Amino acid sequence: MKYICLVYAVPGALSGLSAEDKAALDRDSLAYDSDLQARGHFLAASALQGVDTASTIRVRGDRLLVGDGPFAETKEVLCGFIFIEAADMEEAKRIAAGIPMARHGAIEVRPELDFG
Image (cartoon, rainbow, N blue to C red; front, top):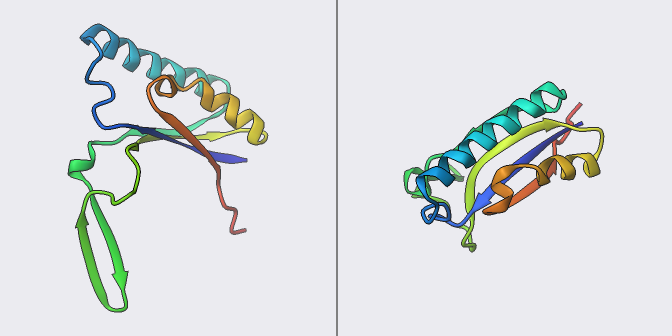
């Protein structure tokens, strides 16, 4: 079964890290992706630019509404994702717990909806 691991963090959460710690986080993240790939769990992953680059699109009736950034009532914002293959939700949670960004934010694990 496929699961998305959505990575959330407070904007600027990594700004207090030293250059060495940021490099280590990047290195650890890429290594974890490689490990997941070797174990057959990795499908895709990507980091996202900051919320200041985002737009929110809504269509209401025949009107297109475009807003700046996300409008969530939360301090944490979506930073990236890892799309994985896992046997079940418990395995997906164990995989998500190994994502290095879990030490700096939160990981939401959600199963893919099968339309088939």
